[in-house]
Image 1 (cartoon, rainbow, N blue to C red):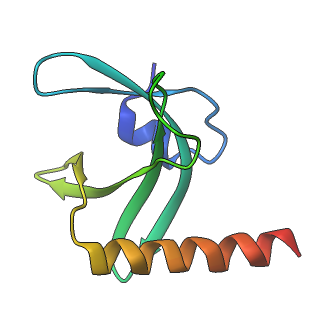
Image 2: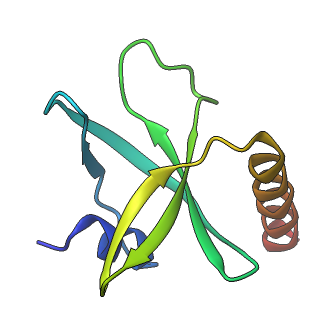
Length: 96
């Protein structure tokens, strides 16, 4: 089984993304997109839970440290807006 980062970076991945919360609970996500901005990579994930709306998503930055990579929840609203602008641009180009 691939680790979470390998799953996210694999363009052929169809498996759910499982992330462990701070209390040890496991959250499942569908990956929406992988978005490069400057020298950074971001992933847009849709949480799979009963109380989540279809349009609810979270943006995570892929952070590399010491030959390891981890996901960090992005909280900068301006950057999130830039990521979504890029997503919509890529989406509209793909749909043509």
